[in-house]
Length: 166
Image 1 (cartoon, one colour):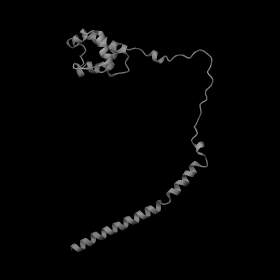
Image 2 (tube, helix red, strand yellow):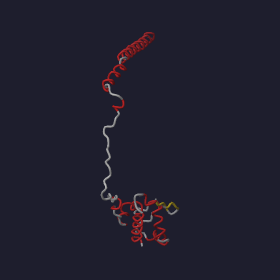
Image 3 (spheres, rainbow, N blue to C red):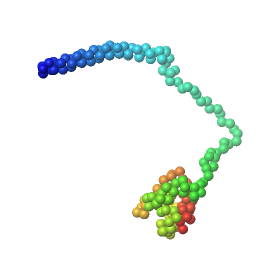
């Protein structure tokens, strides 16, 4: 009985191997002509055009001579950006930390937390807010972590918080 089972397993392995060998042979025979077909297809796509003709730009830009008229207007977009007031800056950038007291930030309206900071003077508060602080009392990223804020906007936000915390 064991001999019959052994013979059956050997026959299955040999049969599977023969089937796999036939499959690989057919696969190779079928794909043997692919490089020739690719070359023919590529030739049909490229035609008889040269490389320079195929990679030339789609269009060209021609520059005309400068007109001698009134001077062009300066970029007024940067000058037209309005400066936000302190409350708007506080609502946009500062409220996340100063409303919840995150990372040692003094809560707006808490006189005890703000008293020693106000005692140092507004210039010290402005410098801390604009340049940032990393000390034992807490962490303050420069400009509240928003580098797009101007120094004037940051100072207005400090003034707003100080006024609400006295």
